Length: 205
Image (cartoon, rainbow, N blue to C red; front, top):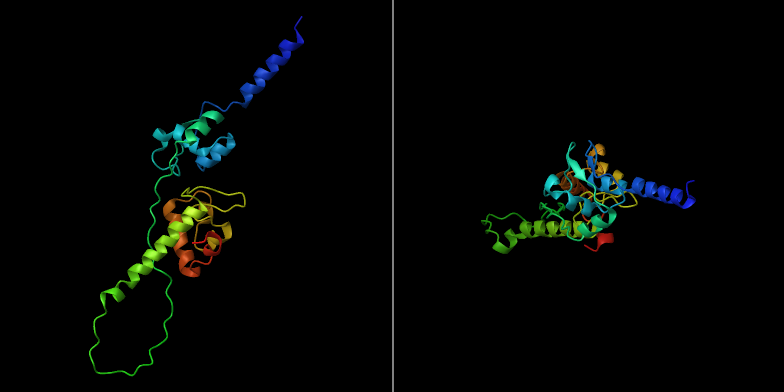
């Protein structure tokens, strides 16, 4: 006769085994590190740290066919503590052009004096200001995580919505899996079109 307690114990062992993640998986086309981590209910930085040698220095770039080890939930949480996001290369874009009123001074035959050095450096200063704004947006919106997707569907370094992404020239197919270079280009287009208004009121930049 089989004791009921033994049956219950066997059922619990089976449930625990079914709940454990597989030892490893093979990356398929269209997979992302955050998507795989969500599937197994673990932290994606911990998944990255467990597979850093396979993935390389950029967690945003995983390749179909790579075999990734799936750590336990506790192990992923522990590994996530040692994760440091990669440095984001931020190109500097000039500030949006503004229309200057036409000069009302009469023309003279006198030679035009060369611009002082301080005036000549104004374009450099405006570019640095634009770059500082961009860095501020990245820090406030994503913390440098190029593949983060928040609960309302905003994505990437600059947390574009799908509509704002496509309006600024972003590829619809790339939304949710775009490279850093493409995200920077979409930001540059949006910045040229609308200036700081899409971000400044919310980020304090």
